[in-house]
Length: 337
Ligand code: NDP
Image (tube, helix red, strand yellow):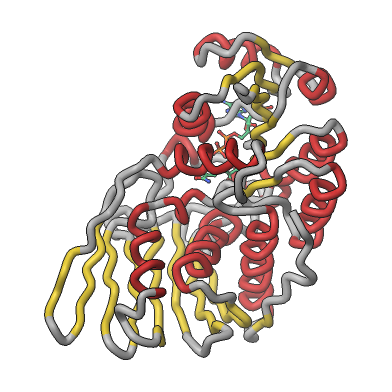
């Protein structure tokens, strides 16, 4: 069965990555919805999409099985609830909503409607992060005790809009990048964080009280501590992810990215070895798992529950930055998806 998609939002991320990934994984894009009819029609034309709608009800009434929500963050909640009510499977961009409580409502709605809800946390699909997770599970570094995430980038000019100046749209680097780091840490370590302490900054690009840089310190259930750096302002920084254990270290370079690039070194008493990595598209892998989940074969790569978790972490980071105190991470009860 070919899965027919409706895009909610004529977005950059859909154009750059997700449209191709849906098609590469055998899906068909039937329609796009944009709040601006002219831009929507142009977007449909440019991307070979047969139908463009200017309102959500029309899109949800079309012959589609699933929606991809990639509007600005304040719109995800209502759009996802409407899609669930219409019985459509939902791939939603991160952050799922502006609060973890709202994200939880989405998980509950999807569960009641018996549709698949996934969060587009692409990084857990990277060969590098999967290799690190497997090495840790296999005991290659002994007991993991510390992790460091380097995820400060320079926000490309064409994305320098709502992320930097619109708090109502869910701008700021924490909702944009810290959520990804939360998910990647949880995925690679196989443990949940319990507490976070954060400093944020406005280093010259963000406005309206938003932050464009953050440094977080995390404590995990296992006792591991981690640090992460997220930023929009660092033109010359590199990304990376390290996990240090009692018997070895995993040192990954250039892996906090949208492309299947980078490397992972395993360093132990024996010496150094570069781990072999699969170089599959991160978004393609997410779409493959999502299509399979619709067919009843397994879970999406990142579930709605994973999206609640990453947002609860981001919320706690923002609260910590505001109050100057460490904050417990409490995503609340788990709901079957
Ligand atoms: P965009 O700014 O490209 O799109 C967001 C919305 O802005 C669209 O829904 C569209 O509204 C409107 N818009 C787009 N282009 C224009 C324009 N030229 N003029 C006026 N309005 C415009 O956002 P992104 O693609 O960067 O992000 C969308 C979502 O995806 C966010 O939730 C973000 O966090 C997430 N994201 C996730 C990534 C990942 O790898 N998982 C990477 C990047 C983003 P309309 O719908 O009305 O047409």
